[in-house]
Image 1 (spheres, rainbow, N blue to C red):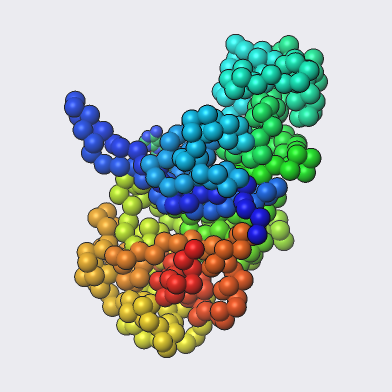
Image 2: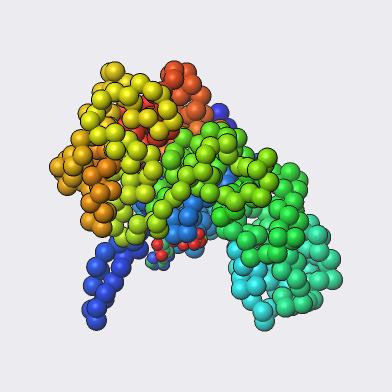
Length: 413
Ligand SMILES: Nc1ncnc2c1ncn2[C@@H]1O[C@H](COP(=O)(O)OP(=O)(O)OP(=O)(O)O)[C@@H](O)[C@H]1O
Ligand code: SF4
Ligand SMILES: [Mg+2]
């Protein structure tokens, strides 16, 4: 199997929270908390999730703006951490970033020639034919004129500025672009043009993209694969059609069902609308067990069934458990109050009625937080594996985390 262009293994980025005059460490922001995925060559992985879920932090670590707390980043199979300084600098050229806001990411005092040509200077690269010619070619590649090299950022529209940002990102001929909300600061009318440009460049240059966006419609359009982040972790990922047409994780289902769509005929998902209440908890003190349990509508439905009896009605949010439920049977359909009894697992700040109504696998002290691993890298735990393993009871198929509690061996990479 071809190795992915970019691979991330158990990546962690924590920030210390410092307080007081002495700047003592008072906690840790778990911005990225154990993320793994592969990005295939010539493919686009869309990364979605609510504000604060860790998308930009992950993006910054991947391009080397931030150093990971732990975990591995492999570019073309090479572990960045194991390379010499020179080797790391060389490999960094392969992964470049397109920033969100073309108004602030381009230095207003620099000409486009200086902006687009700067990576050559930073990396000591002398392009064949000279820097001016190389900048001219890059500008043509992104749909601008070579003569635009003499202008300054304020002389361009937003879309044109983002084209300048893309030209700069391409200067060193990278193989991977990390695009952090590349169109969300642009007028809707211009967004499509920039997306089309990125798609054309991918075809022409064989680029791989990690594409971060809030707009699930844009991600559906551009991405081959999708990963969904919640509180620093990827909770689901898979091929675009699998995730959009059959999301397994209740969080993904809620995100998709919340997308406003003026034309009901082209809704992103067929599932009934799910209301996602409240804000995500703080990444300084994420809830134990499944971090989504404080907001999960499915968990509350399961918990409210209450008596642990097997429910055979097979509804999408049924509390039904398999007759041989194993680990899951021990906790799902929990007796009210049991979640807190099991090791004090329910976090502070979770309202008592919510805590009481959440079944134990959701709050358990043995969290199994592997994401659904269904990308094209063909790793264990893919959706194909799930299909081969036979049908899941309805609630387990809907709840990935509960499912992994039941059968951890099958989803471990
Ligand atoms: N340098 C930093 N120091 C401390 N905390 C940080 C730092 N950078 C990010 N964070 C925190 O890490 C968490 C993740 O932030 P991040 O910017 O990665 O989220 P995001 O998913 O990109 O959000 P958005 O969709 O709003 O852009 C947030 O709680 C944020 O406050
Ligand atoms: S384990 Fe599943 S049902 Fe429980 S809180 Fe998490 S997503 Fe919801
Ligand atoms: Mg961000």
